[in-house]
Each structure stands twice: as C-alpha cells, then as structure tokens.
Image (cartoon, rainbow, N blue to C red; front, side, top):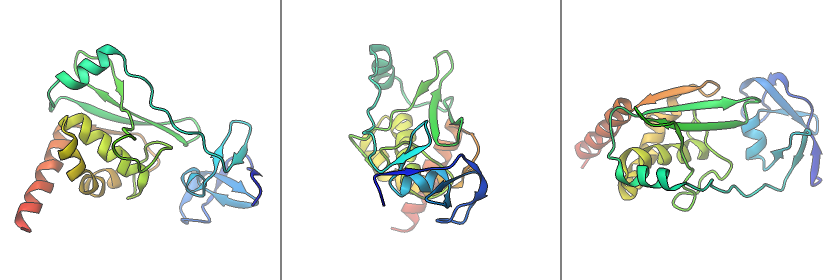
Length: 191
C-alpha cells in the first residue's frame, strides 16, 4: 500500500474488517472501514481526507499546578462522574472527571505507565483503547498505580467493554466502586 491513501467522505455502511454497521464508514482504497478499524489498520485520517500510515506521536497535555495538586491530594470519592464524549466525526473521544465544586478535568492517557492506545480512549469492546480508558479511570479514582494496574483489565471487560460503543457515556464513582468490589470479591472466591 502506498504511504498516502485516499479516503472517501464518510457515509453510512458496514465495516469490512469487523462487520459493524456504521453511520460513518471511510473507504480506504475502495474498501469501507469504521474509524476505529481505520486506526487499527495503521492509518491516521487528516482533516483533508487523506489517510497516512505515519501516526503522530501523542503527547499528553501538561498539567498545571492546580491539576497536579488536585490529582495527588484529593482522595477518591463516590461523587466523581466520568463522562465520555464522542466529538464530531466519531474519531476523537475525550473522557473527563467531574467532581462537585471543581472544573471538569480531562483524563490523561498515562502512556508512561500503560501504553495500549497512543491514539486515545475508546469504549464498548475489549480492545486497546478501552484498556487505556480502564486504567485511566481506575488510576484517577484510586490514586494508586499498583492497584489500578492490578484491576484495569478486569475493569475493562466488566465495565468499559459494556458501554455503548457509538454513544457518549456517564460512569459514576458508585459504579466504579461497585465494579472494584465485585472484581475483588470474585478474585477472593477463586483463590
């Protein structure tokens, strides 16, 4: 395949890779793919509609002093709400943590700790984007890297994989805590 491949304007269709019905299918060399599968095939879609095999390295946005102190000092709480939002063309997704009395804060990917998906978060299936999201939510919620590392794959399959793939979501601190408890109890029962 050439380094640059023309990608047709998104239109409804069915992904040739995963078979999922899509609102926005991209044609790469005449074959329809969804935005997630286009990225999994190694393409990055530019705003001009050209897919390139060269990916831009993701760089975490710098955290300011307020965010750093908030992250390290604040204890996990049941009042946090995580929201996942699909932006525009179904390719860009952001997840933010909302705490009472605080501004919403985008979750960093934490690629320096877990590097499953340098292209960002995803949800609704059991892949690399959901694994990155599961770790980010647990690390934010627990404030404990080792515990988040030990739980995130189970959390991915239990919670993140079950979220609606093509829709925004809300996940409360109570739901996160309940999932952590269920995973922990399940592990204890299998020992």
